[in-house]
Image 1 (tube, helix red, strand yellow):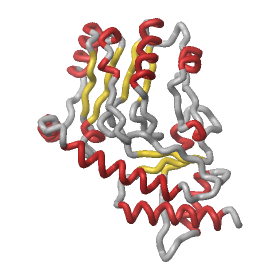
Image 2 (cartoon, rainbow, N blue to C red):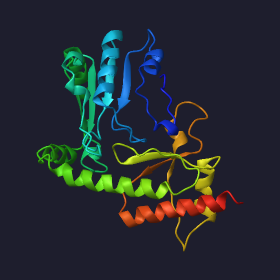
Image 3 (spheres, rainbow, N blue to C red):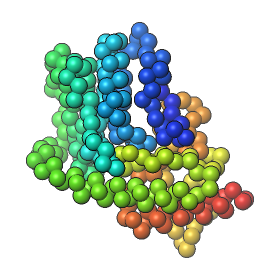
Length: 261
């Protein structure tokens, strides 16, 4: 795997033609893209998707498009999908998931979409040779797809509000680097500390505000390039507004005391 590395200062933007094409070698079989992305919330524009499709066609490789957060795009941004480009249909593989689209945590069931007949045939053989997902998950998952698309309107509105709350609160922390994510329900930020995991351990073992502290995901584990992400964290804004505000405040106060040690 050849990663396209990103930085917090650029909002973890990876859709750059020169970087992607430079990473393609004669051994490359596919590109993996996520939009909206976990852990950064980065969202590809339709123009960026077009560019990636053109590269896939040029080099005769697949695009494995993780679109499990497809409906969760904010700021009146139109939803886009790699499946919209008919001329690249033979190259596109779309991954979808019940657990993420419908917040059905624990329902490990999803689907793969492709118009490539040869790939479809081989995927069917693979599915027939493996144990199926639990029957209850299959029944429940199928029913979820009968929901009216308006289901996502209120859900998206709430997540967009929570994103704004977290972003505004984190922006109050001196030295923190964060661009407002455009989708999903995650954001990755760079903290003004040397090592986010050490900071987290300190928060959990030595720090509290009126008996409360916070736990987050250190972002180093999301990288395959050694050394990257050491002072970055991922936050999932899935809590209530008041809890998100309180958590951001605890992080701010924790950083102040941690860096004074």
